[in-house]
Length: 168
Length: 317
Image (cartoon, rainbow over all chains, first blue to last red; front, side, top):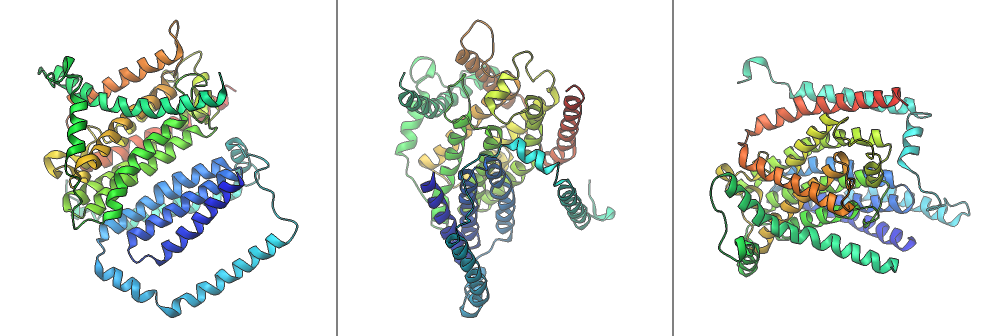
């Protein structure tokens, strides 16, 4: 299983880099989908099948479809590609590179320290996730659902049509 | 028997049966439609026209495989493969009989939902990469339709999950030993059935490829075997949804006298025939009717169904 983990992790890294550097928006989204799928495999391997399934259903299967849907409607052509090319020159790489370097340093420290997290030792069942979510983390769940409700009402308000414009 | 050999046989059967059944279904659908519309249907090639699918396959393989010069080539080639791969992968978690299953995952139901939501990409990307207006309209309709119907498909399924107390498909079937879930979960059954038709883009929900308005919708630019993959993918989707309805609501392989696999096959076959009958009987709605029907009627009903089921299960525990 360790081999599967490393393959999935490498695929995740490569596809994420490609998702950032692609000039065509839909190609970039496709790489992002591949990246999410490989993260799902990583979750599965380290013993969280429920998380893996949710990652595929919600991120790869629902949110990214909406992204692709919007890009499709925008009908981006050569102009957008040129603009993307302009944005991806020189200077804009500095900030993200520094932040990424910090993360890499942290990973290097964690790997070198003896107290690395064990993985693959226990498989977490969906039932356990549910019990924890609606037990100790109940407030977090409620807050998230309130936030989502707020977003839903906001989206409804923005998408509302004025009565005189509605046609039957 | 040697367990490794047994698994190889199971994998082989699970791969080959849906693929070949899909080809036979094309013939079956044309014959049944003809029967219900008082025609003959394909009856020239072989006994009862049974070899019609073989003739179609030979023809489709020798057609010119044309990629439009204005298309996005890589995505254009990738799109038809996605649908076949996702549908075939989902068959891995379907228990056709006790212990006759490729992967007895404890998240079987979620695996099905995840792969069916990935299947949406096939039509969306096909529509986008073809770079023609009919395809784009078909792809947009497909993504909107499949996204919204997936929401309450998942919610309708959760009723059975609550009653069985497990995401594992074998456990769900075993929980139906006394009474099939179609009785206590009748509303969920109807909702899941409708969502299943929408998910496979069959009539009356075939708006993404509505011939009379969109030529052929998202696969208008496809030819040869790439078109064939969409075609076969659709029929395998019908088989898959029939299998899922059988497992979740009709007791899977359970039944008296006959062996388990036979019961499963009979139930799936009857459901497939019902799918074809729907195509013969129902007209196509308008697209905005389809969307508002989904969000304003089906979604609240699915939520109420889940709420009541959860409350009753909790009360009688």
